Image 1 (cartoon, rainbow, N blue to C red):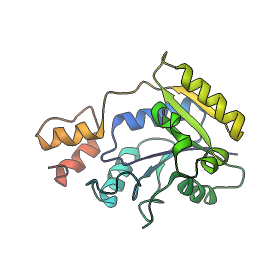
Image 2 (image 1 turned 90 degrees about the vertical axis):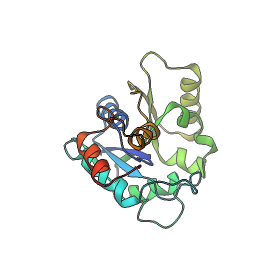
Image 3 (image 1 turned 45 degrees about the vertical axis):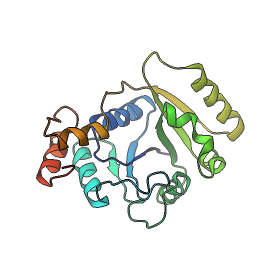
Image 4 (image 1 turned 180 degrees about the horizontal axis):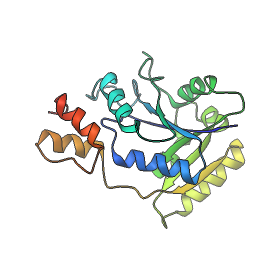
Length: 201
């Protein structure tokens, strides 16, 4: 049985904070690999301008090229339907071997809101979770919600320490637009792709 992590997001662009969370999930939750899933049509971001699916996929592939145990899936960007996490995870599970276990990787804010998501019951029953928190900052509400979903939905939630880097895709796009340096925020291959393709200008 393999333990497969799934990390979703817009990834516009993917940055070192995303990679840090994936690495911590592999090492601390003992995952065999992490699959990055760039979002297709998100229910809450239908009107936001984002880079094309192809561009975001290209940057993700460059970012994980030399990373062990990481890969990229186009399961959402290939679909014309609105992307809901419970559906995405079902599609990915059908591609795995029987017995493999999926772990949805998330931060604390998202974790605490999972019961408000589309088909939350199915999402929580069918999958396990890895929750990244800052070292020493595990709050009572996180441990309480972990206990709640484990008791109600018979799932598994693993809390890991993740040294969250103070990086955001929004800030990267802003810096590129203003002609500022983004080295140290993204991998050099991703930075080269952004500059070569005139993204975020």
